[in-house]
Image: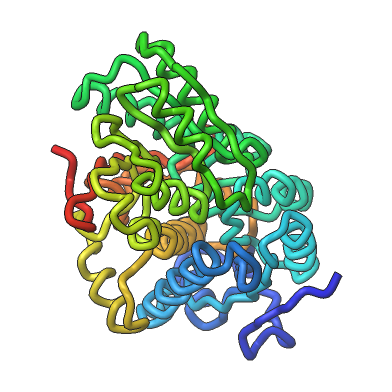
Length: 380
């Protein structure tokens, strides 16, 4: 399999650092004088490139530019295209392991991370996913970390908050039956809803790549639920929302889409109006540095920042904080410093305070939003 590899100018002359043998000021000086090569696995081609891979790359690159300008640590990326496939992700991770990087960032799709993370774990290389959120994947090993709120963290609080606000008693769900994230999200929804004595009238399914959801939506309407939960990747979320006006989906059924993004809202058009999301980042949040990030992203790329760009941006800052804390480029030392991260200020959530649970999944307050006139507003 041929992998497209985009590297910095220094890829052919990767410096082998011995910072782990230094200490104190010597280590800090060494890290500022030498570029640390970090692996980046993102989808640059294929159907995950536009919604996930390219925004992630932009977020990583903006963070790297800012970090390098500060001068404490200098980073160089070895970027590998996973081509939007699990096999591509595995080949990419193997390549970066062979390059001797201490850490790999990216790895957006939960299905891909599930396949590729064991390779990084076996070789004691950090795999730090900025987007994947299916339950249990960080537990693959102690070198696996994630920035997205895992569904076992986000769904319970999201259900409690939305049920308190909306008072729903009977619901329907629709999910992608072959995607790891979607099935994990739906399973967690089922567990939490039942625990909160909410009746699930139907659980409709589809498969990745499907474009016609009219039959599932018609079945859901016939059941007359109070709310509909969507568990899917970006393309399918947008497609489902876009088709709700076409089938006459009633406003009385509240649609809730965890991880809702502005791109999906734009593509869905009027079908997104009134949809509720519980999300990890929003451009309207006042978390520390968030408004500066929004301004800088607009200035650099000429577009509005996407959540996956924001989460990738924050991921690199968290990783660099661990490198500086460890005063080392040794992957085990960085891993130990990552695991001890607590109350680190980021642009994520309501307050920005970032930490890891014992499995390596991020912890911070999520944001509840609703779409009004095509824009995100806080769900008070």
